[in-house]
Image (cartoon, rainbow, N blue to C red; front, side, top):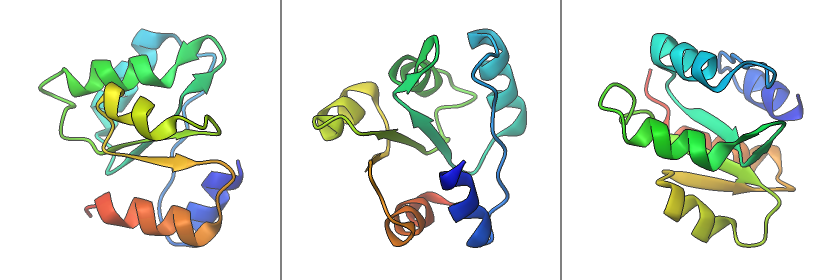
Length: 108
């Protein structure tokens, strides 16, 4: 929620997906919405952001979407690279850091 508020305050339109949604529903929604940037936490209830990232980056229809992995894991840089993410955002983070990283990939 804090991340959404930071990005909304910076003028971005935010859409969040419910973690309770099935893996297939999440993937379908992402493909249909074609977001400018996708932020994924590596630990979501019942799902792993790394797996979602790998899947999206291996699909022709979604491989163009910039993906930023978010985590407090101390090895996040390696994890993001192995998952095929475009970047990563280490927790805790400040608003300036979030806006800078998202701004690198956001295309209107």
